[in-house]
Image (cartoon, rainbow, N blue to C red; front, side):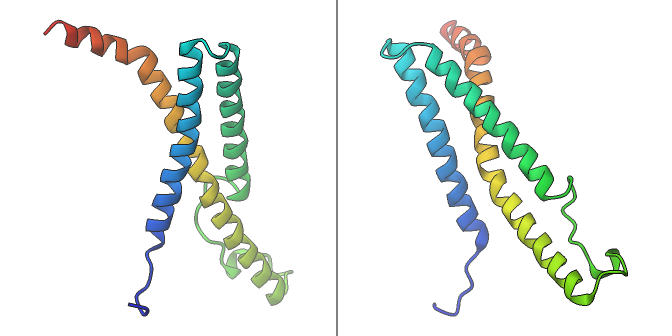
Length: 136
């Protein structure tokens, strides 16, 4: 058992599930508190604007860290000839580190996107589905 290699996708899945649970949980708690009248509606607006700003900031950070939308690793041949071997190696290692950071930044971004998609479905489609199902 100790010689088995762990699958990194399992850890990413659980990390993603945790991020979705936390971000979506905060959203649902605020929605239920606003619905019950315990807090003012303005707090829902503050939460959604905060989520939108965080989503935009994370998206920009991912694009900057990945140097665009390319996920292709940089090779030594693509770097300028004026760089030494040590500089090229350091640059390629930094590139790998940046892309790994960007990969982990995608987790909360996807969780935020899930919240926005659920909000749209809940506001626009749940009433129509509920009305359609009440006809049966």
